[in-house]
Image 1 (cartoon, helix red, strand yellow):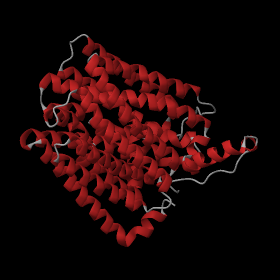
Image 2: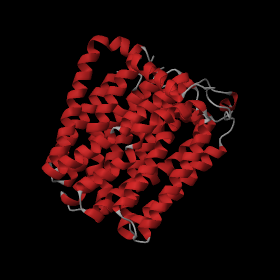
Image 3: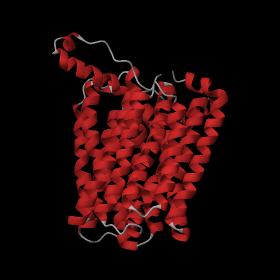
Image 4: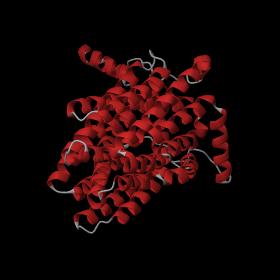
Length: 435
């Protein structure tokens, strides 16, 4: 399916609206047709609020670990603890997602994540938090996400029309990246004024927004998605076999594996760079996350608008190369304005590549395998992050953060060039399968 859908014909209700309003709405829905769905309009604000809270917790956790231990490796270790469980549990999560109502799954997983945020917040506020407590709670959150993330990805196909699915994926990516702008900035202000505990508690309350949005949705299916009664291991095998034999899905998953290990891990080192390179406190750290998020939002919007006019390979390979060059430049500068500019282009390139890969997979997968394929995608994307977090933490500890980031950027760039060369002879086949 295409990455952006055609604008649907105006309904009678639309025809009754003033011409100016219809003109503006028509332009908006042409770029973002997912908003034609009532349920997506309910989903969007709740998810924005929840993801802002999630980013607040991510930033606050990195800062808290750095305050407790002063070790860049421990910052990477704490980040790895939350991304390790998906490596082992996501495939089983995909089977569950293909068996049971996805909204029900999300209600349970979001409630569990809310509880874990409150527990961490209470430990931090009372001053009893330790590195081991952070690691355990992060690990438990990773277990929740092993089910929550594939369910959320698959759930999009239930709340929008199929021809609008690519738009919904782009908007879901926009949610993530708008949150990267707002969440870290709020976290920085809260940490500076009241401490890290407040950020964790605010995140806990933010889950109420997404729970309310899920409960308010109308006309949702309550029966299982698939009537699967076979051994879960056999279902996992079928899903893996399907993904491996599908050239689009297989190539996209290989690409996301490289990005997960060698590109995305730079985010975990931003607290170290803020403190040791630029001498900034928590508020300054929030600016680094925020400007990267602004670039990501711009990248997401452009992908949504121009995906039908520009080759996917431009966004995937070109975005990866732009990210790598920008982050290499970022590691060589000590001038904050220049560093922020590099972070903007780094966020732009990375998210353009990742959101296009996600949309490509969602457009290619058969609905029968959607939960299992998206669980495989998220297992690679999130489950391989511990490798990247540990790798960048180790290299930062022994050789410096700049060298660690440059190494990942070089690997990402080489992989992007290899993808472009591979696709040169098979580009037509590669892209026609998702048209």
